[in-house]
Image (cartoon, rainbow, N blue to C red; front, top):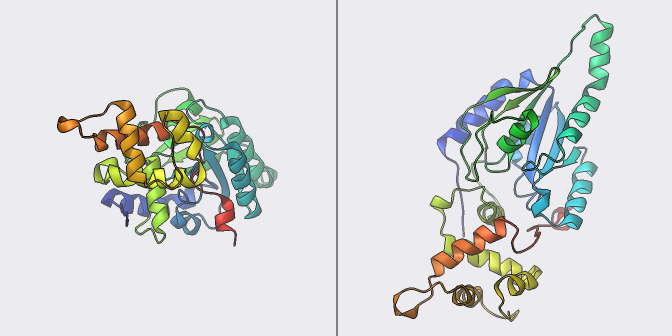
Length: 286
């Protein structure tokens, strides 16, 4: 399943980031804690070179706690400052502020010695679509400044947001990259909602999710849908059984597989199947 999604506004956003990177000291990159590797845009490392870096593992409330800690250590070993956050509740926001000020401490002191009285911290906040940037910013400033949605691609323009008197964020639209070299990356982005559902075959995506759960978290399917799952069963058979237990029927007593697939994906995204992470750092150790 070769999934690609790079609409024109994303290319425009990348150019905008490149043009504005000189205005900031820090780049704050939000990653989805359920797919930290798949949600890390490789273009950002190039754009943000020579800048202080903070990685925010967002949506930790939806991810496996133990694996989140593994990812935190993984990125810290690569030299990033890492913050865990739940942007929907505003958890972790103070940690971002503290981390930014600590990174800027030496520069601020140096400039103040040269006579600068006021030295603001300016950061660019970046991430893939639907990773929670707008929600995070709105909770940061306690009002709706950024347009938030559970669908990707809503934010289309940059804007400066003053978090505190001496801390400003340059908000940017969600951006992917032109080609996913790893097929699984595209699948993970689709399952978690970073790619528009309008371009996806939802049935195929749901079968990929079931395939993962069969291998890693079979019990989540049994518990949520009150079905007995054979580990050797085919994903389509399981999707059909879920539809039967939910009563999703078409004429002729056939199971409405599309409706079943939509429910499965929606309930996974809402963590109704449990706190599940789709990838582990052990798979990406250099």
